[in-house]
Image (tube, rainbow, N blue to C red; front, top):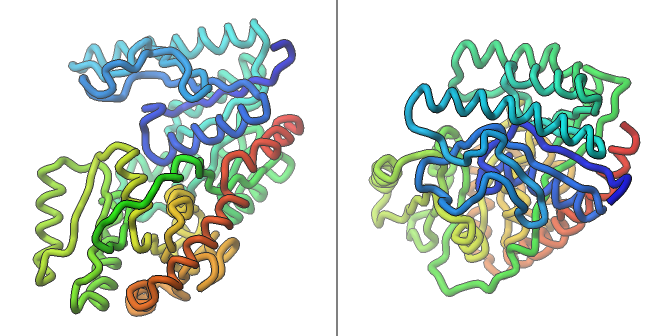
Length: 395
């Protein structure tokens, strides 16, 4: 369509089957499509292992979203030389594809998610070369991350948050703290807070009969949080009537089994079950059938800056969310009405909220349903399309 706006998403991989960052990008694209804005997701290289998603083409349309892998491969080749050849081909393919887009109608905005300096510089250069504004999808204060990082990664993140952030033409921060951070760094540039977003329609499935269980979903690298949940569960697990399920990412089946046994050794009846690398349809079922969903946030700069994507999915399940009063939680949620919010990051306080679910299942269910209503108002992707459209027009 002539004069139709066109937004490109840069710097991500594994579309459309990636984790939270890919899901956020996908939902942003769907929000724009809802406002008749054309979108294209550009992935530089293949990242899946051979055999994963074997029928997925390197270029096409997914849920109305145009996408392309500019290396013309969606899988990671075996061998050092082949992998690096693919990377180079992908970079050149990015250049060609953006150049052609510019010639054939233009680019209204580029949205960048990548945080590696070498790639950030390239995308900023492309935006200058092809004269389109580039904005950062700002979802974390990377320099505040507490998990183990190499020295080179720490330097990378420090430089990004200290200086490189000023090179972008605007930002889409996920939280008030990140919005304030970007405003201080670039006070004259546009800055739109875009909170967690979710496709609530995908969670409209029927509940299935199952044993009662709490559910936590997150990376195994957040071992401190997992240990916190285990300690809280110990406080309410005398009878172990409500089980504890955990969905952990990034580990082999063997490692997950070892980790599960290690945790179950703490209890009498082995009440803990771990899941890893499960299909999205199974993830949705686990959310929908849970008694409550757990997401304790810590009183750190890292957690007060971020707003975990899974909170939106938790709300979409219609089940109560148990969390802590950190960061964006205090902006959107009220304890006992839209979520069960522990006043602090203390095991005993969090355990009290879990105990409430065990002792008051009907009241807890009502909290979950009201939380879902809040989520539909604030976080459904369709509610943010018009805001994004106005942001593009003001760039």
